[in-house]
Image (cartoon, rainbow, N blue to C red; front, side, top):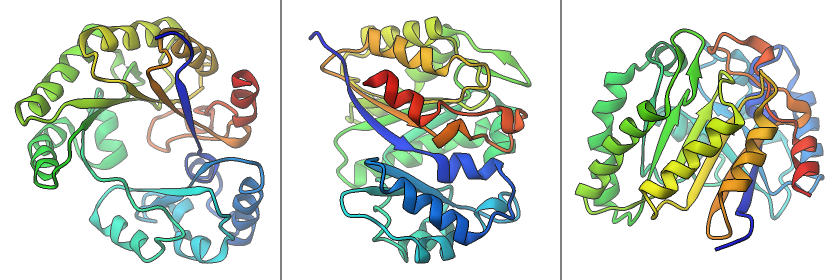
Length: 280
C-alpha cells in the first residue's frame, strides 16, 4: 500500500525534558508549562514519571503536579512507571491520567551497562522476565504482543550495535510470542544515547517488514544528541507506508535526556516544533 504511515505523537517535555533539568524548578512553573502545552493542539502529553525521587529528584513532585494541573478534554495524559509501586501511585490520579496500557510486551536493552544504570536490572533479568510477561498476556486473553529494544543502535560504553545483533534478539523474543500463540504486531526502538543514523533506521524498519509482515505498528524514541533524529524520522516515513502506524516522541524546544546515558543535557530530543513543521 502506498502513502505515508499514520503518525501518532507524544509530547515528552514534561517527562524526558524535565528529568534532565534542575530539580528545583517549582511545581507552579511545571503546572504553567503543562497547562500551556495543553493549549497547543497536542493530542498526547507525557506528564512525568512515578519513580523514586532518590534516583530522579526532578520527579519528586509528581503527586502535587497532577493534583494541580488543569487537564483539557480530548488530550491523553500519560506517565511512566517502572514497577508496581509507581503504577499504584499513578492509579490515584487515573483519571485525569490515562490508564496504563496493558503490559503485554517484552523488552531488551542492547547495552547491559545502560540497562543497569537506567532501571537497576541487567540483561539477564530482562530476559528472565520475558516468560512471565508472555504468560500474563496469555492469561488476560491478549491477542497481540509487542517487543522493544532499548539503546538499539549504540552505547556510549560498548559502541555500535549491528543490524544482525538487533535482528537476533528480536527473533528470540518474537519466537516466544509465536509459541504462545500470540502474534507480534508492534515493535519499539529507543535510542537514548543518539547513536542511530537515518540509513540505519531505514534498513532496520525494512528488515522488520520483510521478516515479520504482521508487524505494522512501529515506535521510534529518538534522541538527538548528534543531530540526526529528524532526518531519521524522514527516513522512517520513506520506508513505511499507509498500512503502518508510526509512533513518535519529541520535546518542546528539544530539551530531554536520560540522566543515566552519559550525555547529560546534550542528549536532547527532536524539538516538537521542528517535527510538526516537517510533518506538515
